[in-house]
Image (cartoon, rainbow, N blue to C red; front, top):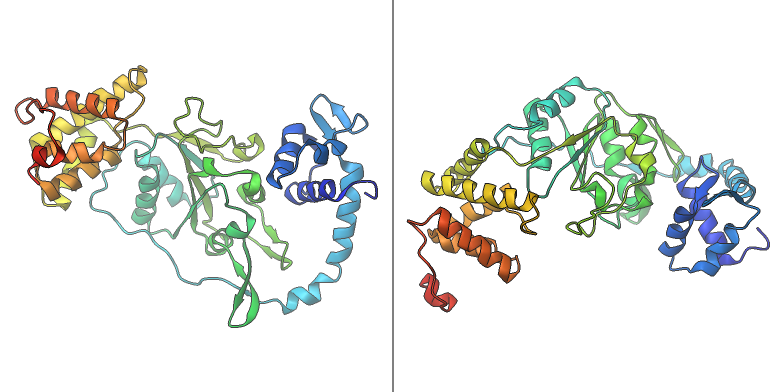
Amino acid sequence: MKNLKKSTEIILKEIANRYPDTTQFRKNVIVEIGKSFGYTGKDWDPLMTKDNRVRIGTYDLAGLIEPLRNVAASNVVQMPQAAAQMQSIVNEEKTYATTDKTFVPWGPYSDIVKIVKSNMFYPTYISGLSGNGKTFMVEQACAKVGKEFIRVQINPETDEDDLLGGFRLINGETVFSKGPVIKAMENGAILLLDEIDRATNKIMCLQGILEGKPVLVKKTGEVIKPAEGFNVIATANTKGKGSEDGRFTAASIIDDAFLERFTISVDQNFPSLNIEKKIVLKHMDKYDAIDTDFADKLVTWADIIRKTYYDDGVDEIISTRRLCHIVQTFSIFNKRDKAIDLCISRFDSDTKEAFLDLYSKVDADEIQPRPDEDYEDKYDV
């Protein structure tokens, strides 16, 4: 340790902190941690020496890490007194999902209900394209069972402090505020990790928790045991291997050791035509804009686009969520073409025009060929 420069020590300490039970590390793990501090090769290269290499791309850092852990252990001896004086608090409010009348059961919903009802610890990973109802399905399953439901939105900045908790200044006093993961464990609730493939290795603090094990809150010395009924369900657009087609650019590659802790993986596809029509009609009813013919045309249009997308004919897709947005917009303006136009304007101009042209063929009686007009003239605004 004496011969390592400060930046290299910082990288080493972070490695020891993130992986407390590991001594051998792949090169990409060391480099990723170094880059997270803004360091370069000269800062992490001293860790990847010939003497430390055990095989190609793997380095044994036990001789460097163990002294760090021994120092940490000696510091823990003096922690109980300080920890005893440190107050831990948690938000006692219970959170339950409410039943949504627009929800239509389909796909793996019945399986999710059975998992929630079982009260077992059964980590479940749900993947599927954006806007096909993954999160909504879990929420409504918990609402049906009457199970406490805690949703955590994951992003690249999500870390241990966000998940397990951290120190906060409350009424002039420093206290440890327990995070949503600890709250879900203590309450025996369903913990939904939404968009988990947006996370970085900062969520590796959940490794033990995904095994159903007690967790040590390092900052206070408390050991939290999961209550009966606690479970983790994660949703993602990918299967944790990144997005090869570039559609989900923020999707990260999740560590295999992390993914392996999920008992099952569930694929969520888009609903069938009949189911999707029911969903559209329920939203029309919600917004008092029932139009059965329009509902038929919308789901047919979306289905053709999806088939073309799966055949690599187009780069964009119309999701179930997008159809619901079109219904809401239709309820405001009462014009089919305007509702569709407004709701697909986020696509590039060529894609938008192709989608509008396709809808004009699906709904030839309602949508007439559009002259090249100004927006105000086209929609009479």
